[in-house]
Image (cartoon, rainbow, N blue to C red; front, side, top):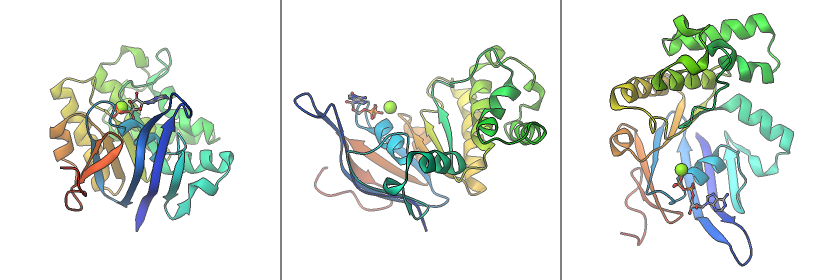
Length: 233
Ligand code: ADP
Ligand code: MG
């Protein structure tokens, strides 16, 4: 079963005289439970591809299906709902409310999903347990180390019980010892069945994934699940 299917996706920024084609006719099928590394040089289109797969941005052309449902046919509200119930996000820059507690940060998606407070707290504490941070629940987010902040972001990504976690350079701001713990948590979640899609510069991290997809100039030039793709190298 394909959890994500992309057909002939193109993305053009600044349509018109100044246009830039960031993705060129990209097709890709991702199966449930895979761990995928999207690799390639800076500017090759990795983040653009991830944002389109995660329904955070719309393609200029092409079709996307998530879990068998074509997203291009959905309205805004349905899209938001699908994104909330299916996806968790982990970014390089953490994106937390620095002055709020760790627990408050982890509860945010549940608040958006209108889960009642007592349940929110229970679910969030359970997510913090999965990243080994229950003891920091009442700390201010800002007082944590980089690695701890990223683990809070992973906990926050878990509260809606996602099928897919998207991580854009999740260890990009971390030293190698701290990265290891974050990677361990992400791959542990993958073992439990969550599909993992990681955008990374880090070839070592990429090699730990079950499948590597390499982009160059907005095209897939290599996919370890197939042979080398077409004419490019
Ligand atoms: P990567 O994540 O691989 O570094 P991106 O997907 O962020 O690459 O960007 C791919 C290309 O698209 C880059 O050349 C970038 O400058 C361009 N780009 C990205 N976002 C925009 C935007 N909002 N407007 C115009 N160009 C953009
Ligand atoms: Mg990027």
